[in-house]
Image (cartoon, rainbow, N blue to C red; front, top):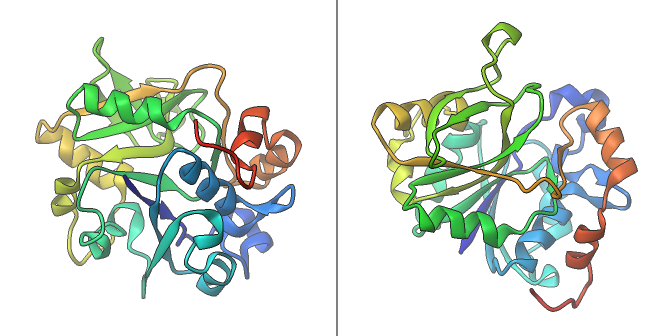
Length: 248
């Protein structure tokens, strides 16, 4: 299975921290956020990963190279302008030809990736969102039916629009045919544009809720970045940070 890690954003909410550094390259206890993500994917058997680039791209390429020292092959997609979280898929259609993971590049998590992938295939989903129960704060929110199928999704709702505490955790499993639903020219966002379009068309989208013992944080604000410094890595995360640890 392949993955695309979204690493092109400018991280403006982090102010001067990301003026010259991509948000995924911010260090948390000695390693870039993106390195934790790459090692997590490799630990669960991903052997080929794409990373999209825009802001300060050389910082990422210089650190990871072809990915071989992390046990994974990395290719890069340089965007001449920001294409958005869904728009980033279009230039990589030749690479994402089988069901794949889409991973937001500011997320640290230790959950068992195999559980999300198994859930996706067991339900015959075209798209599966990972979801975490927490108060909405700048994230998309979801409503599911009893089978886990997505009924409603709203990206970054205002306080009076909030209808759920299930928030988008930033790791998705997607079928490659969904890339055809992304506009070829205009920037496009997964939560704002693609998911509502797919829901309206009746495409089977499901939500997988993280187990309560799992850890997940996005480092998109100064507050969450500081919190990650205190809490990460977890005991579970230390397993995939071992240089030659056997895969589970």
